[in-house]
Length: 158
Image (cartoon, rainbow, N blue to C red):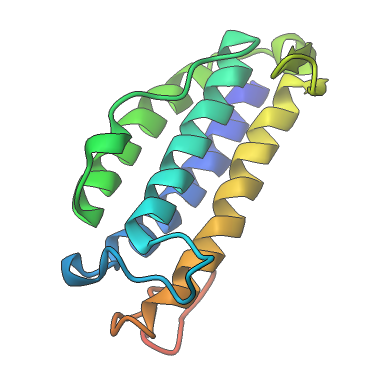
């Protein structure tokens, strides 16, 4: 089933995203490299909430409200736990989607975006990968170590 394959791919990316978010030291949650940049913890929440929302759009077949719960989180560990819980539950549902369901064209955000449901899953992944890269560039300047992402980093052997 195509949904099972996509859930597996997104699940592998989730594991990497958890490592990057989890590398934020509690003492550096407010770090940002520039006044125009998001604070580290806010960026982590944005990654988590965005991925959950985009996956939910594909599952529900249309607009969904922003996910509840992440706004109140105050540490990277809390964001990782929330993100893992929400994405794991969503991916279980993605695994049941048929090719026909994933090919259904959806129109969301007042018609601003129209594309097949499967593209919202691709967008969820691309959005997380993009902002995960942004967040990983915060880590060394805040005194943290960059975890392995698609192979070893300068801070990790694996």
